[in-house]
Image (cartoon, rainbow, N blue to C red):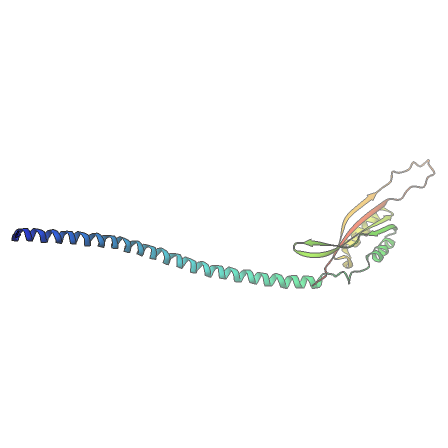
Length: 195
């Protein structure tokens, strides 16, 4: 069977239309994939730009923090150097006894606790706690406490507590000698043993 010219023409147009449709579908799909890839590339470039910017910011912040750390280490070193060490601590009991004599107080007792370590804001100190019992006028006790607070030898010592006991006044008719006021002074000293 022979096909006529019209049949061949129709057949050729059909093949052409099918080939064209197939190529158009492939092109459309590739075009969509290309557009998606271009969008992904734009997103990736944007993220890269942001990461580079963040890297610069983070490097700047790191340098700033390293600078602050170096300053803090210098300050810590200078502070450690000026803080009294345990070996260089004054003999507190002798000085306190002198203060008591100066203010007309009688030392009734003195006790010290065993030194122990205590961490304050990341720095380990050796803590010395001691207690002093005195008898005498209340004004003298207060003057002594004030002198301790102002004395440069006690720069690393704090007066933690002062407990003053004032006895009841005795009636004039009794022949009992009145009791003296007494006080317990609790002190805490901090010393630093450098590495």
